[in-house]
Image 1 (cartoon, helix red, strand yellow):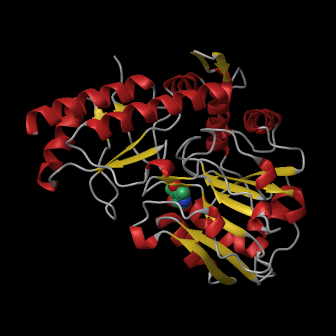
Image 2 (tube, rainbow, N blue to C red):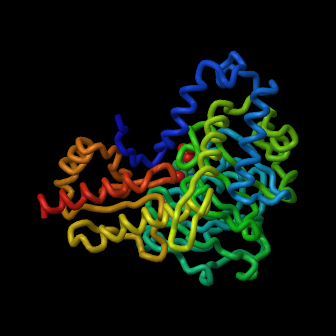
Amino acid sequence: MSRPFNFSAGPATLPEDVLAQAAREMLDWRGSGMGVMEMSHRGKEFLSIAHQAEADLRDILSIPAHFKVLFMQGGAIGENAILPMNLSRGARADYVVTGSWSQKSAKEARRYCDVHVAATNEADGHTSLPAYGGWQLSERPAYVHVCSNETIHGVEMHELPDLRALGCDAPLVIDCSSHIASRPIDWTRVGVAYGGAQKNIGPSGLTLVIVREDLLGHALPITPSGFNYQTVADNESMYNTPPTYAWYIAGLVFQWIKRQREVTPAGELTGLAAIEARNIAKAELLYGYLDQSGFYRTKVQADCRSRMNVPFFLPDDALNEAFLSGAKEAGLLQLKGHKSVGGMRASIYNAMPLAGVEALVGYLKDFALRHG
Ligand SMILES: *Cc1c(COP(=O)(O)O)cnc(C)c1O
């Protein structure tokens, strides 16, 4: 029996292979006599899981040796406070606002440092990306924060800003919660990348922080020890008990990414390259149909449309309920848009197969025919 396709924005669908493997290993992880949830985080079994997961993530994202990978808790919302505590030194930090998530980040950071909004797309309802060359960066900000994929508004930076080219030496901080591991990251442009796991990597409860080593060691004195990046790094993410089961599932997802293969006209792609090619194909299929439908509408400008989160609107909100109930019957779940934006949203993360997007487009066509 095949499962419905789940378009939730997060916690989101996981690769079926991963769930099946976790189910097989639930009662007895590889002959240890224990389930992963029951293991000491300091025992050799869990340490092997933890180290393998980090090695696989480093491999997938080509994370350079001078970056630390921290497996933390508190979510990206927690990071909105934890990050300025660790990086701001109480001074000024620049924030670029491109949607609800970066807006939240800027607001929370104001409690810990002097926040300067260097650019915002608020005037057009968060549907564009402020041109990098027009950002009003501070003289010497402690860091520049962006959300590289706005999960709610569907605005994605397809290329990260190069701050040095903009005359700014500050580290770039990216909240990449909802598109991490969907494409490569250019680490020459990044100081810190963070994100909650529950969009593209695993279950909620795990927060990844990938931080350049030279940025450690400057936390404000008020920083809780368990949220001090230096302390967490010195203790290999085991200063306090980490979210062990979420870490394990993330590790299975990383191995699943490494196994991916995609045959394209340019040849066979593997791992993250295969994932990225598939994500591009899925997004092109969905936006391509929406654009020519003459029925559905999208609002985000074409050059910054998210490959992961696709908000779209029916011609009349009165059709929304019928659309959602029909979708559910067709095995297409959780398409309702975020309440602040309205309409619909299809989140098509790594774990959403092309067949899921094909099924969605089939339903969209059918619904438009019946209601157009
Ligand atoms: C989901 C999300 C968050 C919030 O994550 P929590 O785990 O709820 O703290 C923050 N930023 C982005 C970009 C997100 O997608």
